[in-house]
Image (cartoon, rainbow, N blue to C red):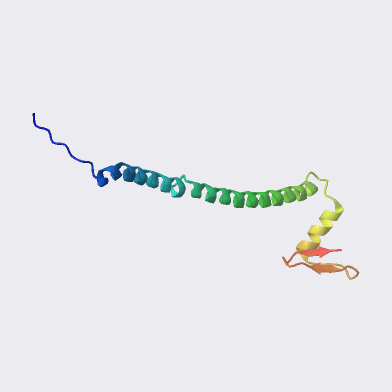
Length: 110
């Protein structure tokens, strides 16, 4: 029977740890930078916060518009609301009134 024994080299002992390190580095990189990774999750959370703020602003605007429509709806229009809308549409005021111009171009009539 013919047998030949070899002595283990240092290179042979490093193959498995190097392959394991490369394996973990690859999956670790993609766990952070991948499409569903930690970095993408943080970006999605930031975008969610921004969209939530925009949603809240639009919702507040809609609530205000609904309130104004309710004041003019159902034949129960208030005199103040009618006067305010007419003056805003016609851009007029009486001589004894003070008109304050706001930055948005809307008129405030006191």
